[in-house]
Amino acid sequence: MSIFNNNSQRKPSMAECNARLNAVGDALYVIGGKWMLRIIIALSEGNRRFNDIQRAVPGISPRVLSNELKNMELNGFVRRNVYTDIPVVIEYELTAYSATLDNVLTSLMDWGQMHRERIRHEALAHS
Amino acid sequence: MSIFNNNSQRKPSMAECNARLNAVGDALYVIGGKWMLRIIIALSEGNRRFNDIQRAVPGISPRVLSNELKNMELNGFVRRNVYTDIPVVIEYELTAYSATLDNVLTSLMDWGQMHRERIRHEALAHS
DNA sequence: CAGTATCCACTAGGATACTG
DNA sequence: CAGTATCCTAGTGGATACTG
Image (cartoon, rainbow over all chains, first blue to last red; front, side):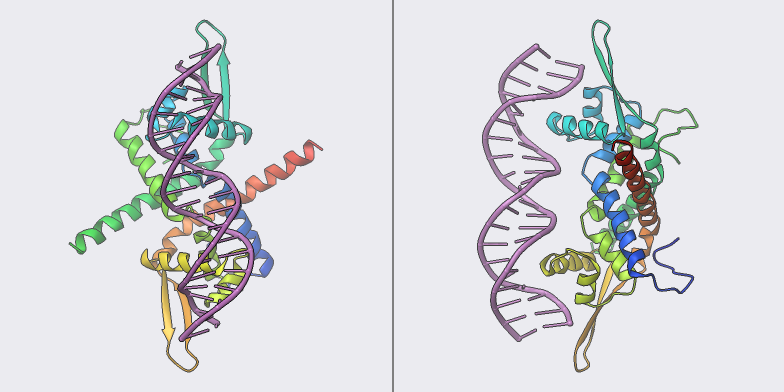
């Protein structure tokens, strides 16, 4: 259902309104940080080890990456695997649950791309 | 295209990877704040005047709402209309551009709802 | 009603150095 | 390599009072 085109002409109830607000709020609370989605993208592109991820997410410091990964593990987006061979290898991998973010991620990517184009054209128009 | 299931088996290039990262970053930068999407939802549900919006977005202070609305106007999501009758009436309305957020918004709502359910079940399972 | 003005608290996140 | 430890800053946003 679209937020913008209310085909049924029915005015949404207070309860419905708050449910929407809360759902979006929850989602943003979890994924709205600066880094989490980027880390997911990096992982989905095959980076598994700490320093790989750090390289794949430009600008992130080890401290922040460490915190993010811990949170993501707690929330079930990521699994941390320790392979106790010598040398020990630690790898992160996305869980199935993180795949539920697929729609969110692609819609954000599409919109971000579109928005960037728009800004670019505006800038040109004003120059 | 899905981030998670790369059917073509092709490993994405560095350039593609960065493009995705940037697109998501841009999108989050614009809409990732605590308030903007909630204000859009409030507006989409028929609230047009300053205090209406403030009531419809629980917890927002007038200072923050004022700042957000100005930003949103600058970025083309909202139009501020001043009707110079007596008494003067000021109304905010969503622009066509804000409707481009439809997919983002609905996917966030859906995911937020699902995630909340999941958390609830987990809490029950642990009690 | 539609905001401003002030003041303040918190915390996400940056820089850098260090460790087992 | 996979992180911790410290320290620090900037910016977001809360509380409250006030104004044309």
